[in-house]
Image 1: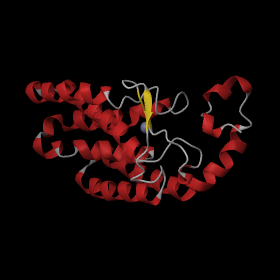
Image 2 (image 1 turned 90 degrees about the vertical axis):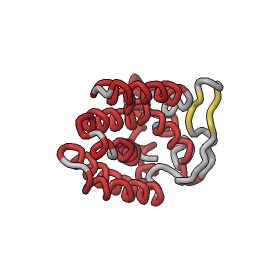
Image 3 (image 1 turned 180 degrees about the vertical axis):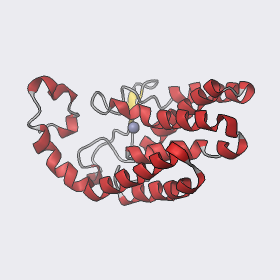
Length: 200
Ligand SMILES: [Zn+2]
């Protein structure tokens, strides 16, 4: 799924705390937002492998959530939310498409790398690929209610996710078509940072 969908899912997970525990909800929303986008910082270096830990994040998240429920400090809540966000991100990547330039073709069996088992997990394609109509539907069905529930900077972030995500979905197939041409102009010394699937 695309990054705006990951971000909105993270915010949706933490949103109930605005009612249940408003004094730590800012920490929870911030942690969940950062955690839900953090794994994709590996986009240009070993994407869905370097910062994606589908087993380890959940293992760390479970005790962190228990600790946060006990001590309820903003730091503990923020850390737990970060780990939950990162764990959910990696799980979502499994429910999407594979790692390839045109994921709608469905030829890649690489969804996310499992460091514990030492192999790639296969994509389930419940959401066919990142930037698909189904991806947009998920983004909108969470994002629109969040626009009402959240306020301040979080509302702005959700609005930005909806705009960026919708634009990405509209352009998704065209971007895949022009990517190899654009990346062909990348200087040799930077070529290692271009994802393999974009190399001409
Ligand atoms: Zn990812």
